[in-house]
Amino acid sequence: MGFFKKQFLSVIEWKDASNDIIVYRYPLTDRDEIMNSSTLVVRESQVAMFIHKGEIADVFGPGTYKLATENIPFLTKLLSLSTLGNSRIKAEVYFVNTKRFMGLKWGTQNPIMMRDVDFGNIRLRGYGTFAFKVEDATKFMKECFGTNPIYRVKDMVTQYKSTLIQLLTDAIGESKLSALDLAANYKELADIVEEKSKEEFAPIGLKLSNFVIENLSLPEDVEKMLDERTKMGVISDKMGTYTQYKAANALGDVAKNPSGGGLAGLGVGLGAGVNMGSMFTDALSGAKDSRRQVTVQCIKCGATIPGKSKFCPECGATQALSCPKCGEPVSKNSKFCVNCGEKLTFNEKTCPKCGKVLSAKAKFCPDCGEKIK
Image 1 (cartoon, rainbow, N blue to C red):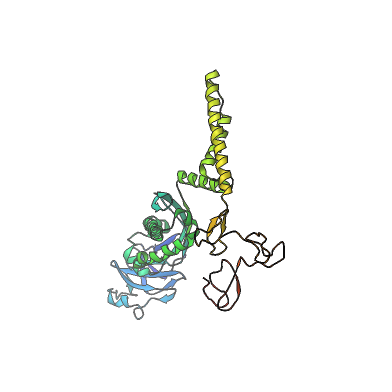
Image 2 (cartoon, one colour):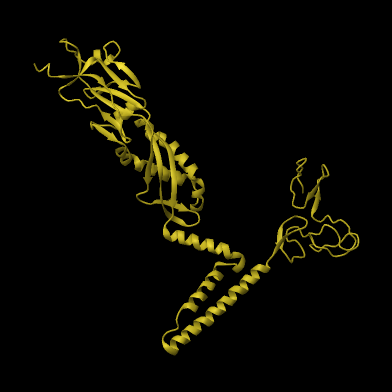
């Protein structure tokens, strides 16, 4: 009578209604029996596995299968089938989801240490997204999955997210990029991580894809330093140096600070004001001097020289020019003499091979490729 109380399964299938299950064990109770001649349905992006006594007995890809001894080798090799009525299959059935799981998030729990050429040793934090899929279901079941009835995406992310951070750290270190250049190379760094991940994930049947770096941020103090440098660059044409910029800010702070403390406090405030005023005057004077240091290019060799130089320190050529026809003084950028109208060729060179007229800065002829000395 115990035999007739069994529930014989005619159709075995998994209708996945979730978005986060990687492995699902088909629920079989002590009363359930898989019959020889039962139907197995495996949908797209699924792989079904029969496991007998802890060993993977057979693997089925997408399709519909009639379970019978003539087309399933493990039925005859691994099982002792009953001869009473229909043969019964004693095995566990697992479904592995092989679709791509996308939009998963990663982030640095601890900062990534980096040696930067501009700022020295700094710490980076980052975050982004990635996707993965089960590439080889057999390897994945052997290497990663235990006996749990369900294996979810969060279990995989918790287990292997540290591996992704390690790969990213290696990619940043080997790239030797400065902190200022990282933002322009997110895609290149992500490609390196994906390529390196093959060595880590292929042996366990997984494949990483769509690794995206959304942000790599510097510590707050380093970001403040970058902001100061940016401000300095914006006003460099007006004030010249960072010291001049700080002097101007300090003068504004003194003006806002109340004198306090009666005459003594007033004296301190006035003294500070006088000193800061002197510093501000010196800063403006330095900025004015920096504006006067105009540079030009030598009319013969093209080297950068001070604007008021009479001779080039590189080639010794004189920088004083005059019209070769009437002797009228002319500027270096003049194309014609203002006195006689003679065409001036100070800023031109002639190719010795093809005769093409070139600018004074030309090093090669664009027509024949001749090197211009």
